[in-house]
Length: 481
Figure 1 (cartoon, rainbow, N blue to C red):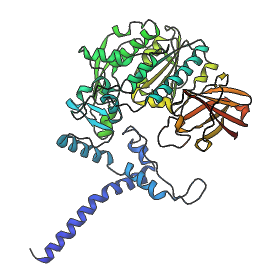
Figure 2: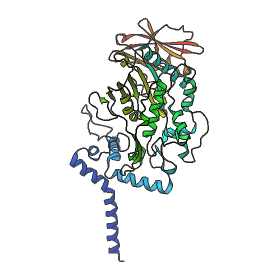
Figure 3: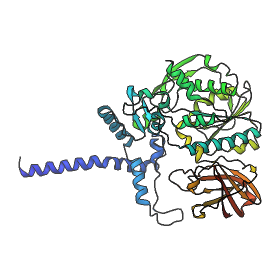
Figure 4: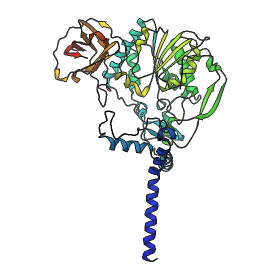
């Protein structure tokens, strides 16, 4: 082969390589030119169970130069380049088949084609991520919620939905060893058992059913329970509330194979792998109040002539499968999907039952999102110590009818038993809750407080009292919003 031929082959090889590398960018450019909205046309907004980066602009809303444009463009291109879903799927399949390793950090490839959500592993292996003080703070916060709900004539039930790995740990890879130690939910159950708080033990019911060789209760390729798991969860909740479950589990049961697993979609967004699901032929006589766009709406209301009683349920994605069952069981239901619970709905609505469903892996949400409700007025404990005021942070903002006061106290008192806010000559009980997002913190801290007070108190001196086992300490500050 002469030199001229070699040079020609080199040029062709280089052109082919650059051509292949240019395909994603060219495909994206064509798609943008055709639609002006790549994410909308390709449907990739929810393909990986997350919100993808938005297309950046050279200028900000204030018409200033966007100094973050390079980083924002890189994030947008990484999320939206042409053939992304196909390339991600191909790489994921190759890596999974050859090495049995997931290419997605939040997905674990288990035995027998089971998939698991990585953040659930500490709970499955018996690793505590919440210390004793934080568990006590959760109990303290939940008791405040319970007192408020019961003062409005409703029964309050906490229903933590277990992670899939807590019910089926046997399909996890062998490298994830079960220590036998207590996890966060074990510690919380133990602490709540010392109170009069009502807990719906969904984990116990699901574990017993799984151990007895019954039907599969969770999807293999999804984080959630399937139709059988949801039905058992519904029955357990009715038993906890002391209510008739209307015999829904006795309805005709069929199996489908049309469930798109969220974990599978994260691994292989361009390829379908439908999972089995159980469908019960229960009556569907309930109707939605107002417009409902999807089962993931932030607020869903139902009414049913054949139902009885009223329910207010705060839920996450595990509550989706319960909505058809509860909507048929109760005469009126309101389902809210939110992190910060608007418990003050009880001021205008009067449900018979209030249920708070929260997946096990998110128990820490009880420490970073204070429920929105009027802080109860209490007597001020006597203070015996003067703490370091430099370790105190006080923030306040007006939110409609409320003055939201929150902040941090000295971490030396992170094992506090209670928190109080005194303003305008009145003392109010505060949640032991770190408003992580509002305080712009990377992680939650155990030395936070938060409460909602009347908005007319928006300009005054504030005194924060932290009660510990050794006495009380006080901080002073001022708010003007």
